[in-house]
Length: 125
Image 1 (cartoon, rainbow, N blue to C red):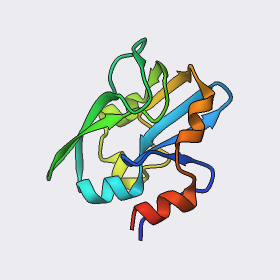
Image 2: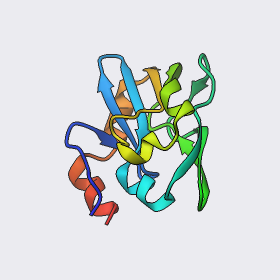
Image 3: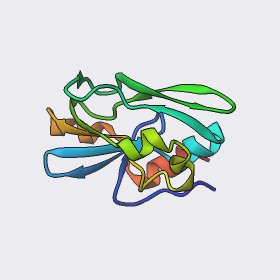
């Protein structure tokens, strides 16, 4: 069974969001990294780009597949985790510590559109 953290919110597309004030750190879930296999490439998009909730912002590629990354929340990308770009396999090692982008949220009400840990756990079986 995939690891799910209680303090995060989840998208049905298997991205997570860690909310810190007006910012959100975004990455992929343990379920997603396990399904993809060994991750060999991460594209975090561009700093300064504005994304809408559930809009594609980047991509992740593994030895098995490529997948678009969708932003769980609307906002502006303010930081890309260069460590993940340089060492994509770090997402496999710990998908919750190794976030991909940080956004400044433009609509915190959207958090209510995301799943809590219990709801996501049911989805990711």
